[in-house]
Length: 271
Image (cartoon, rainbow, N blue to C red):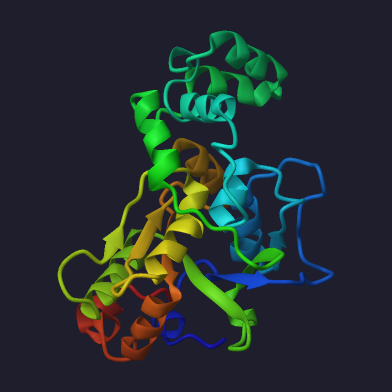
C-alpha cells in the first residue's frame, strides 16, 4: 500500500499494519509453539527488518499478548488467576490475597521474571484497581480469525483485513501525526493514552477506538517493560502511535494539504 502520510512524513521507521488473517506466510517470523515470546518483538521485526511477523492462539503463549491482539482474554478465568494478575499489575506480593499461591508462582517463573512478579508492574496502586481494569477497562476481543499479523504497511494491499496502522515515532514525527489527526476531528482530544500493558496499545485499544464514531489515535510504549524492548530494537526517544483504520483513512485524504506542507514543518523532514 502506498501511503500519502508516509510519503509526506518520511518516517525513520517502517509503519506496520495489524492484519487479521486465517493464514500466515511461510516465511513469516513467529514464535515456536509452546515457547514464550513478547509480541513487541513481533512488531519490531516488521518495523525494523521489514518482515511479516505474527502468531495465533497456540504460538502466542503470553496471556497479555493474546489479549492485546484480540485472541481472547483469560486473566479472569478463575478467582486464583484474577488475583494473580491483579497482583502482578499492581504491587506483586504485597497486593495478593493469597501469598502462598503467589509465592509458588514466583518460584516457578523464569529467573528474569521473578523480581517483576515479586514487586509487580505498578500499573495500579492497589490490586482492586487492577481487578477493575481487567474486568472493565481492558478491551476484550476473541476475533473470528486464526492469526494476527504485523506487516510492513508498504507490503499490504486493499484486499487484506487491516485493522490498525502502528507508527513508531520520534517526538517530531509524533507532533506531526497528532496535529494531522486533530485536524480531521472535532474537539481537542485526538489521542487516547490508555493505562495498560504496552502491547495493548498496539492493537486492542485501537480495535476499540475503531468502533467509535470519532476514533482516536492510541499512544503507546509508556511502560517500563515496553521501553526495554524499544531500547533494544529502536531508541529511548521512540514511542508508538496506533491509528485505527477509519482515522488513518481520513488522515490519508488530508495528508497532501496539511501541516506537512507548511514551511515551519518542512525543515524537520528527514533528508
